[in-house]
Structures are given as structure tokens and as C-alpha cells.
Length: 264
Image 1 (cartoon, rainbow, N blue to C red):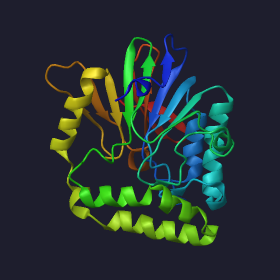
Image 2: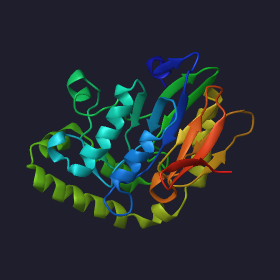
Image 3: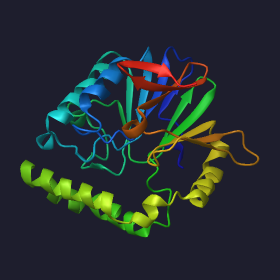
């Protein structure tokens, strides 16, 4: 980690809450945009909202590729941003063609205040947090890592941006199907050893490290460190959101019947 990565936001005296959401895989059947956007509107006093990737089943970021699903969702994030919240997006494995940097031109397209393709850090009062999607933690999944390197290089992205919208969406749909149906060995096998190794490497520097991607809810600790690696429950199947107050106290919330309720 280089020095400029050490802190993206410093919030020495938080006046509001920190929310963390992961893996919604939005579509119009199992995880509709309307419900997700309604949840965003119910966040109480949101100072900072961090989304840990895989927002849609598949997302081509340039606006010419969007459907109504994408427009609805972006409006929800836009309202948070325009009301003064930090809106942080950590890219996952189902995001394609996102910019490397959030330039002024891109800020007019995607309503995020911060964008990261890797680790992202936050100093929150007396606490220090880090965030990542998590799809590259399992370094033994070489087939997936090769696929990601191919589809996220500049040459591939330049060619893909030139494809007409309808064709690009069809190709993206095929890619989504491939993501679901390939490399099942690694999808069904939770990489316990690799995650433990990752936790050992990162926890000495932070109080909590938040990880998405695995669609689970777990805490991982390592000997000799007070830090916790926390795998964030997915929105897709659990409709859960993590909330940390200004003191860093954690609540797990579930969205039910239009209301966010604490999970005891």
C-alpha cells in the first residue's frame, strides 16, 4: 500500500452514520431497483455510504448502455450525494467500463463522490476502516483472474465502448451467464485459507476491513491483532445493510416492508 492509498477520506468528528452495502445484483425480478432505491431513501442521517461492488447483474458504466433499471438506481445515489452524503463505490467483478479515475466528466454521469478499483480507506473518528470488493482475494482462482485481466484492460474496454448499445448489452448478458455457469469449483468452495491469509496481511493496519463478494456474513480475526475482517452480507438474498454510528458501533439492518430494522 502506498502512502496516497492510506486515506481517501478523513472524518475526525463524524456527524452522521456510515452505511455499507454489498452485492445487490439488481435486476427487475429478484432484486428490483425500486426496492433498493427505497432503501437508500430510508438511511438515517447518512454521512457516508459505501457500496462494495456488484451493483447490477452486469453493468456497462457508459450511459449509452443504461436501461431504466440503471437510471432509477443512479437517481437514488444522486439524491444521497446532492443531499451532502459521501457516496463511495468500490468496483466489483460485474462492473465493466468504469473509468480509472472519477474525472469531472464522469461525475456528471455516475453520482459517486469517490470511486475505487481496489482497497479504499476511511479514518472515521478514532477508527480506521478499509474496504474492498473481494473478488481477487482468492489468488488460486487463476481462470477468473485471467478473465478479469482480459475484460478490464484498456484495449478491450476501448473496443467495447465502440459497440452499439443493444449489441453491447446482449454481449454483457452473455458474460453474465458465463460468470454464473463457469468455474463452479471455486464458486461453491469458500476460500477459507486465502481469506485468513488476507486477514493476516491487512488487519494490523485497520480496526475493521469490510469485504463483499462472498454473499456471507462473517467475522474473521487473527492472533495478535485487535482488528476484524468483516464479510458484508449481500443485499441480493439477505436485504441487509451495515450501519456504524459516529463512535463506530455496528448495527446490522434488514430492509423489510419499506423499513430498515435492526437484526438482533
